[in-house]
Image 1: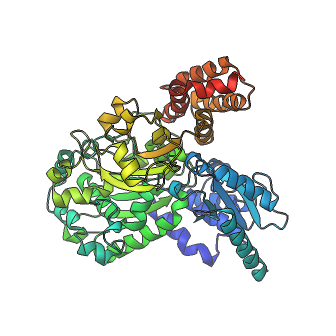
Image 2: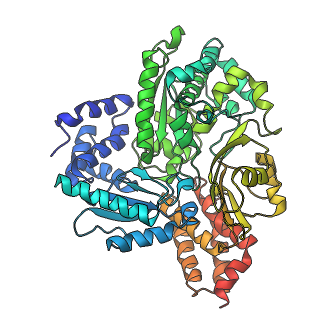
Length: 164
Length: 416
């Protein structure tokens, strides 16, 4: 596993390095690439991004820690982030979030024992007219209810098992 | 008539050929036939004001850029993170070329070498779509070197944030784009000045909705734009309605329409017929809350009229709450948002949001006292105006204004 020298990422890394005036500006897109490769921003990934940008790993780690979309620990295969901000909460998002954690048997931020699902709440995702909603691995799933969510969980479980 | 959400009238306007068939890039062609200073004059005359929240006159902002500086930039604020805001998303999903055209007109007007579109990270699919649009424009000579044979060169790039409300603040956005922590800068120098913008060069930072208005202004003329809306608030605005209404969503209406028209004629009135409206946050979590009285309902949605009822129209992220909602809970929700989103740089905001959250939790748990309500109002008043950016003021608002307008909602928790 690596991003440096990995043909999967060469073109993307070059494109990001080319679009800014400074190499440092590419730290955010390169952290996304590291997260894609390792599943989270691991210390290996941080080190590679630092090497590509001629930065100290500590500088890169501070960026990774500041932003919520970089995960500093491994997540489940399906990272479910439920918006519980005010507009969604007015449409029942707090109850939906509590139900989902109970349905999966996890605490806030926890991952199911099979490693499939991590559940946490997030701040406003700009989908306030489609509440309750969540993002699964950064893909929006909107206008949810318990029935629709049960079907989605079943679908994701079978997807995961099919690949396994 | 939609000026911005044109995808609702014209299917497939997100495709370049359809956009071009409907006056697409006529605004840019018109601008390229003028001098940059003339373009700025047209935008000034239109009365367009920034749609990100502050309402600063757009043409005036452009005119601050020193023309003698060799390098200038445009940065598009597509970080759309205000609680209750989801308008820029629809513009970029359904009418992306209009944003790109407006951005290029702005770039030409200030002679920028490049445009950077800063998208919130969750909008990565919109970023992919915009990247495809930019390549389609390059193939037609509308992006890159010598645009439409004018001799003007400009590149357009997208950049993804990664989950930080503060990056919608323009100086934090610039820091983030440069690969630093998304924290506000000390000003002056302001972004429009040498030393204050992107890579220390003079930079215009405009919201998506602001720039998406510019092609209409160039094709139809400043007078046509100014004819829409009120004296001080020209043009249409997209109002994002969420919360307790029957039909939440985006509604594009002239500025100066009333809250009553928006909430009853368009958004369908109260979600539950037996639960009247109680309160409204007209500018997301950051603006002052107001009781939704008849006087407020009949107020025109404009910069000047909203000031007269003690609030702001801001980005027009209109969150509606009915009589079932406890305003102490609302204050708690919004405070938790700002506590999470405080970047930690300024002490009043970092510590203030932390302690406000702790004390409101105590009040909600029934362990608070009447003194605690006074205490949070006092803390909030001491945060306002003491921070580098407006987040400190935003975080103070939900406390100060919920207590001012709904004292009984707090009293019920501390008198039991």
